[in-house]
Image (cartoon, rainbow, N blue to C red; front, side, top):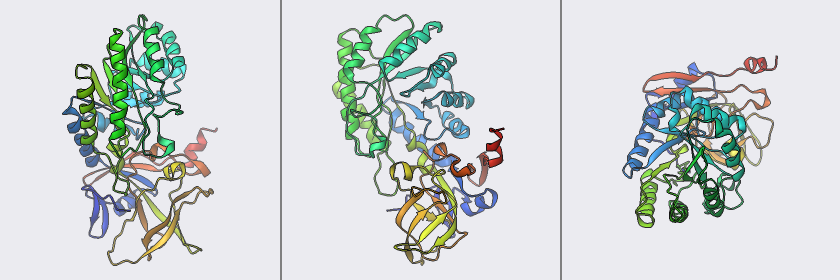
Length: 423
């Protein structure tokens, strides 16, 4: 495994820095474990994304399930991006962060009636509908709407992607979306509906995808349906192509914005040169993941066979991805010395579950000891948003670094505060 350091995350004077702040100095102000993000890296990632997709007139909606902290949302929104949401709570967060309602897309396979009502009352820009049953419910609830509700039907293009089986979303048997033939029939059935404006097609084929070929295949299948609909007099005004662009977690594999943007543009130009509607994508992880770290402290170095254990104060409830789908985050010591000899450890947390394991047979400096600080890299996405209080643990703080300024953007949630909900 390589170490994906970058311009904002690197060693200076043998100390790991995020921008101009040493993580050890932040740990003097904020109790471990804590999440720490680079403002400059988020802005840099967003700018690269915009440059790649705007060159082909492709819009961007941030998939806020990756990280929905209000400060992060405000930062990304300030660059002109819309958002893709998957719950009423995310819609409420988007509005609270100052994102205009018309720039909100509402996706998700299991929207409740209450969530749909909230989205209608908010006046969001588009519903991505995933089933005939959801569309029927929306058609009933939309009768009180003052204007036709914009709808895109999410199609399952049945495209195989090379990623973990738990994060594929566009193959047969996944719970997401509908077959193209069902979408075609729903366009026919709701063609003249007074409250619904079926004008878009959506897809999302999975997450952490590091090759562009599946996007070419999926977009091609969506365009085939677009042409069939056009022949029947239905003009698709929006193609929502999802996200899932992979980043480098230390194995050297990733998918660049420019590559996937070019593939999308070339496929549309070749197969539907007369398409004149909008095209949007929904990146999440690729905007924020490598901007964040999870800083943790070593509780114990436990001698054992076949390998010693490195027991951290961060646990699976702070970093769920390894337990959920065997993800491995690069792990570094905050203090660095290039003459250290490495030793293989099983890296674990303190929670009473065997699945509270971050990595096995992982190389760490042999002189690591209790009290030392370490940092999991690429922790800006799907880490804090998945955190919970299992084992009655406190929920870590989130910190945003701006050059040499440290701002706590979510304070640590104590057990006393959590117990207050049970009064």
